[in-house]
Amino acid sequence: MSAITRPVLNKKQVEMNHLLHEAPREKHFITGAQAMAEAVKRANVDMAIAYPITPQSEVMHLVGDVFAQGHIKEYYRAEEELGTMSAIAGASRAGIRLFTATSGPGLLRGLEAIVSWPGHRVPAVLGILTRVVNAPLSIQPDNIEMAYMMHCGAVMLHAENQQDTFDFTLAAFAIAEKVDVYIPVAVATEGFFVTHAKGYVNMMSEDLVYKEFDPVASPVPAMDNETPPARIQRDAPVQKSNFMSYLIHSVWQQEIWDSNSRAMKYIYEYLGGPIEVQNPGSDVMILASGCAAAQAREAHRYAQEDGLSVGFVKVRAIRPFPRDEIREALKTAKTVIVPEHNIIGWLCTEVKAAIPNGGIVHEGPRVFGGMTLPVELIMFEIYEALGIEHKMKL
Image (tube, rainbow, N blue to C red; front, side):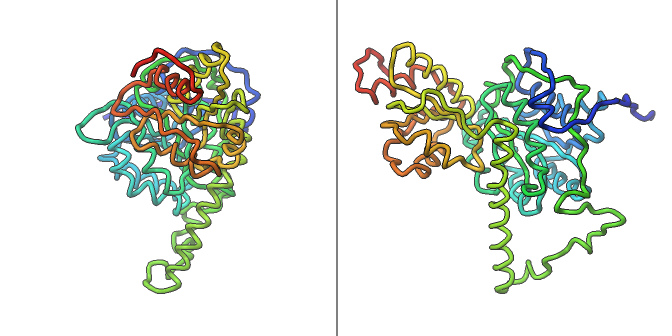
């Protein structure tokens, strides 16, 4: 069997700030899956590992095409999700830049390995293309799976649209590899609503790529002939059932969450901050993330046309959660409406805990199981909060 030959590509390596803020861009009309794959192309990824699951399959199929075009050094399909995520952890020890993606039940199946990534200081980027995980079986959009990821220590970004998906994924590689962070970054967006729908995305030339990963400069040395595994083992007592074990685990978990917090300054540097605020100081504030932010943005536009005292907060970063920024944005609000694409309201819970007057946070509206979120649902809540008579019936 003849070997597969791939083209040798000459690309200019640049800093992430140049890619995101300085390089000229051209507008393209592409799907969210294409946007994530195009970001991987420009991220100068060393290795991608995949296992298919709808709606993630489209992303990793396109990343496979990126590999075939010569933009990624290595790519292979694992045998199942846990194997994929375990392979990512193992490959990370070689000191390389890594990407994978998953969806719904695939995320839950690989979660045992994924939640070990922060503690093992694996600076991989994980795409999460959200879908239903509850029975009865469905492949429709629902972001309840993000709730399972929120407590493992990984940085989490939530993309509203195709442009966010491109920018967040590209920025994620730089954030993950910072010496004072060096933990995984997950970029989530709603399956189908974004992954299989087209939108306008401004992208820089594919001849520009992020500078190569430098394992020597990382806080966790790569395992090679000069740095064998025996030299990396630092916490020999960690698996023993004694006080030292508890202390080591406690200190290390604290360090992981401190690393998570330190990612915030890079979220400001690369993405302009963890939230976006429009019409601050309004009586009613709509706060949302992901696809719900797109619907909330439209409801805010309707409210402005009606002359109503309504503002809008889009949350980009779920971890680290922007408590101070949200507290400031909501400090004069009388009612906060939090639309979501899940039944449990994980974002609503976070917001209630973040502000001193959590009682002003309204539960919903929420849709789940793949349902769309009509703007009318949000407008109904706005009218109710402002005490305005209306003819809407739900």
